[in-house]
Structure formats: structure tokens, C-alpha cells
Length: 249
Image 1 (cartoon, rainbow, N blue to C red):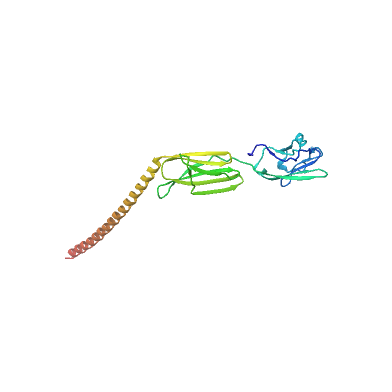
Image 2 (image 1 turned 45 degrees about the vertical axis):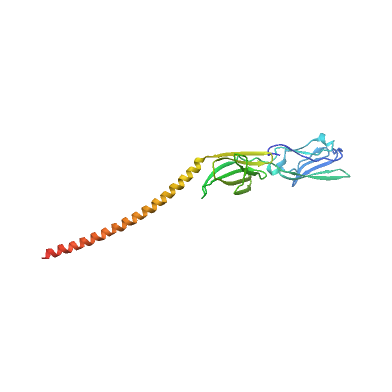
């Protein structure tokens, strides 16, 4: 059942004999619903179930003690026990109940390029219960393998995140499935993206080469400049001595 919906937890007696005069008890960890002496007695019921449980008294005549649980929550998920007891007989049955929560629409983000020029894509969706399946498909409907997967659970449910790398323009689908529920995101990778990467790679290479060339020129210039300073100082010093000598004469 989806969160927020009403659900029927089945429990019945075979053959179909009336259980109107019997005691019907539904348990989770504690009391969920009690029917006794032809009436519901829920004084000791778990607080979170107050006003959300109901037995169909007419169906009790047919041996059906199924419990209606309204506005189900993720916290309702688990194993329930239905216990039916008369003065001379008793039996019980268990019901495993799973609450489905459809999460957020998946979001595809571009995570840059790898060293080979492949475009890294990341798809993420959160708020699911139970854990959903995430798959990538290309424009032809062919399934693509995820390179990395990350799944974790918190109070809001399950979050999934998968990454993939593509090497050419295509229409990529990210689908998150939970049984018969499916949410999808689509991204179209154009050839311009890959041209941009190649242009950036070439530009980076040119910049590196130019930077190296510029560094060599600067080193040569500094060396020559320092040489000129040294020569100038030396010449000035010699000139000063000559002048001093001339003055004495």
C-alpha cells in the first residue's frame, strides 16, 4: 500500500463460521485493535493507531476478522498478528505489511569530464520506501551499467545515487522504479559538449606550452638584464676611477 492510503490486513476463519461471539485481537508490538463482547475496546491501543483501525462487524458473521487501517504511515510497516479466541478454541495468523512511498523525481547533473573526454552524469532521487531500483537507458532503450552506486536510508526513506560516463551525444534516461511505480528524468547530451571539452583540452595544452615558452623568455631576459646591470655598474665604477685620477692630475 502507498503511504496515505487505506489498507485491509486480511484475517479470516476457514470454514466460514461466525466469530461475532469470539475475541479478536490484532497486535503489532503492542495492541492495535481489540474486539470483545460484541464491541471494540481500544483503551489500551497504541497511541499512533487511535482512530485509524476498524473491524467490519457484519463480516465477522462470515468469519472475516480483517482489519482496516486508514492513512497508513511508514511507521506502520512490519509484521502483524491476528488472534481469534473462543471459549474452546483459538488460532492466530500473521500478516507482513510493507508501506510503499514514492520518492522525489530523479535529478540528473553533469559532473564534468574524465581524462578520456567522457561526460560523467549523476542521477539522484530520495524519499523512497522500500529501496527502489535505478537504471540508465540510452535513446534506443538499451540498459547502461552504472559505474558507481550509493544507497542510504534515513528518517525520510531511501536515497539512491548512480553515476555513468558517456562518450558521444545521446538521449539518456534515468529511471527509478518501485514495483509498478516509475519516475524518470532525461538529459540530452549534444556534440557541442564534447567539442567544448576537446577545445578546452587543446586550449589548456596551448596555454601550458605558451606558459613554458614565456617562462624561458623571462629567464633569459632576467639573465641578460642582470648582466647589463653588472656591466653598467662595472663600467660606472671604472669611469669614476678614471675621473678621480684625472682630477688629481
